[in-house]
Figure 1 (cartoon, helix red, strand yellow):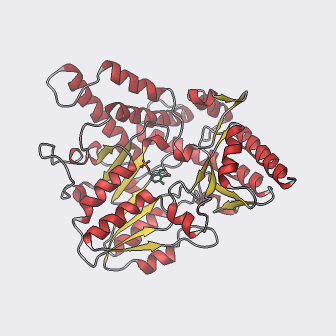
Figure 2 (spheres, rainbow, N blue to C red; figure 1 turned 135 degrees about the horizontal axis):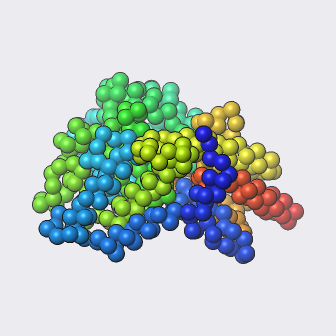
Length: 423
Ligand SMILES: Cc1ncc(COP(=O)(O)O)c(C=O)c1O
């Protein structure tokens, strides 16, 4: 079952932002890895909440009781999204970074001097810096797992060599926001567990492209951000309840000591959490449409949706690789061999030998093609690659992007590159 062009069009029709024009042309949103656009059901759910039932929780009156009930449903929806056992295993927060800082401080209290933790040179700094700072406070060593020089994928041999009986944690991304490379998550958890280390997964870049499955991956903790998968600005943290319960996060005294509430400091953005459920149900809706079965449960629907999204995005990736490879002086960073396409998501960083990344992104932006430039906080990677301070240009596709948009990008890039060559 796949995403037909009719279905893509019906998805696109749900995103009002995709109607935006720049200089008389439709805008191409290739900036998804920094935050996707949202389907109309997301702001509608948020508005309905704010206008109809806005309240703090646990009060003795109607809107508060309704908020309590709605929030329970939201926890459940997010549990379905990551395949957690119950809604209580999901904590919300402002974003992945804030949740990781709070979580790392609490987890570090369980470490002893001389322990080690592993982070990777491929990760976003939000899955590196919080661990380095917590480790420094706890007197714990931090080791960096490298990436392979050829295809820039995580070096699993290096991971194996660095894991040892002192390793307490492996903090690793599910997929790189710089190269699009997908890490072998299940293998990583098996390797870490063989030395009794825990695994903390950053699923932020994975969320819009693949089905997250904490049960199948057998990981211990996972963070994600809804604004990367068609939702509002919101972060979520999942952890195995038996590991989360004994931890003591920094919190105010009257707040609950139970999961998930002890992680959710202060009053949450209820409207964002409600919008978070709406974006999950948008994705589940794709699965229901494809299977033509409205009765499928949310998890089953998500599974079907992501099978189709993965397949469609691989076709987009293949076309983009062909187009980019033919442009003189352009380097694709990461996997470009189509035989390895299953190991990457459609996030492509590029560099041109003669055109600074900022200029390239600006010129594309002026022509209505929105891409990101810089290091996108994959700072360790960009530094080790020698890309600083120019960074890279990131073309990030999601399922609402089309083959026509890729053709427009390639034509525009060719025109920019050939103009520069003749100057
Ligand atoms: C892979 C990855 N991890 C973590 C983050 C940080 O997420 P947040 O903005 O929710 O803190 C990002 C944001 O770009 C990301 O791409």
